[in-house]
Length: 50
Image (cartoon, rainbow, N blue to C red; front, side, top):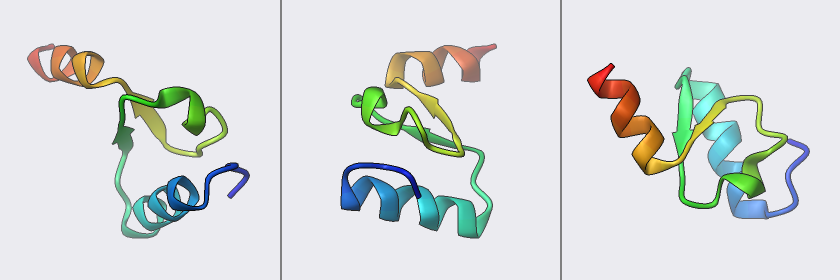
């Protein structure tokens, strides 16, 4: 993972390993290089309502 924060990298790697589609976080700038889709909580809720 090309993420600065170790815990963020572990979260992204674990998500990728188990096949999740996205990360929901209030700190999306730290996941800018994450291979998964990244949502702010309000964006994710809006997407669910679709």
